[in-house]
Length: 211
Ligand code: URA
Image (cartoon, rainbow, N blue to C red; front, side, top):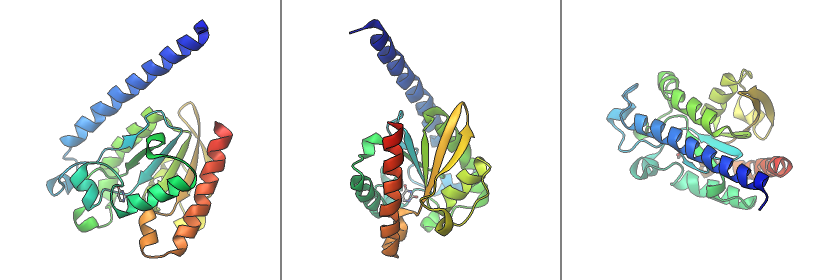
């Protein structure tokens, strides 16, 4: 094997180890986090999971009942829909990184409150910086609004912006933001599934271009 390829592999391996160490450190901080009241009722904080070196990061809203029990994001009914959508473009969970804005389940799955997003997004911001994805796909209104504002794009309702590509300058590179409907919305409105299938095709074509 030529020396250059070997050195690139070593650097990649070291980069992955550093990312894992940094992410582990944050996941430990979350266990003891008392920045908002959500720690009081949740069972398990849900940090995020997947390929730390993925080109694409999905950001949902908050853990639900199953996620709270298991400690992993999107393992309930919304997760099943997400898996189908990923499968439709031949992507596996192991290929992506996935997390939520809130790491603790809001009681009775109520909407996140502004102060909870403000406290918890500090963790999400660090995850984005460490993973440094080329694409961020936000799932639903809450994560779309947060990410659009973070990157200085005026936020609009998900009905208007889903499946569109917003390119923003971040850290040392550009990030493509692709807002999507939340997979759980399909449980109430089957038309949303058609839109999600189309929007996943957008993700597929972008991923193929950056390969
Ligand atoms: N909905 C979310 O937004 N996140 C999860 O982890 C599960 C359901």
